[in-house]
Length: 323
Image 1 (spheres, rainbow, N blue to C red):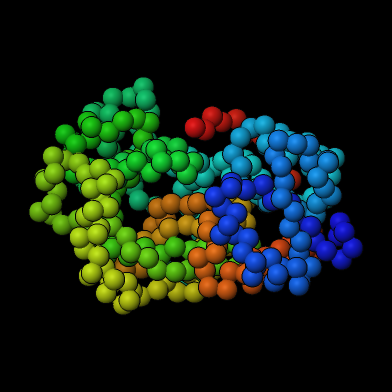
Image 2: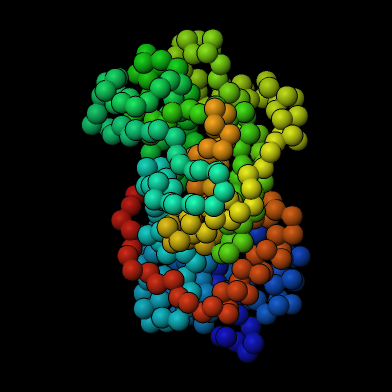
């Protein structure tokens, strides 16, 4: 421990995340179990702000990554939560889901995969139908970069080849899978995993596929979901949850494959195959405060870290340019 019997965790987080994360109830509970949090100024040397037993972060710029890497080289026992290269993998919607394809889960009858998808680069002609090899309409068009910005959420639902021409590259084209308007969001914190149910986009019916000029914008998609909100809530209450063993195995598999410890992922159940699930999105360091008893969940995570003392070594500083 860095100071007496306390486990000191330095944190570098966006300002908007601080109020929800560091509620007095959480800080008091953590302190009672020997976990002490210290705010990090990312513009100043870490040497002047430590010592730390661990550093957790959600700051995305190369200068911070270099500062973090340099500090760990001189303090190899410091736990970094999580390695920048592993986090950056989630900022690309293609590499994000590659981890799911490598999973092999053997428990139970449930299977997991990802929707059929294709990537269109800026140099390619998006109206070229050959890019749709293996894909069937309707298709979700999502920006390739997933960095939490407003632009990264600028999605469209495409019904026809004509609608496809209105999408800007680079973009990921992902086959839309009907899933009953139900989404399962799984929160992971180390060895802990929790599945909660949320409303999602309603199913697309056959008679809708040639409407709306071939494309729906993100706002139109949201309005479409709101129009069916009453029935969606009823479906939510009756939703059958995935088995606990399946969720636990999937969470552990992704933790290992991604090399991450704080993340959540969105899971949908294929309406045509009840035991078939698709992971459609993975996010780093989500809002754990939305979970009941999050104070205990997060404190348990840091207490376990203090016992394991296995450093997450930074082996690579990713090159990127995020807006």
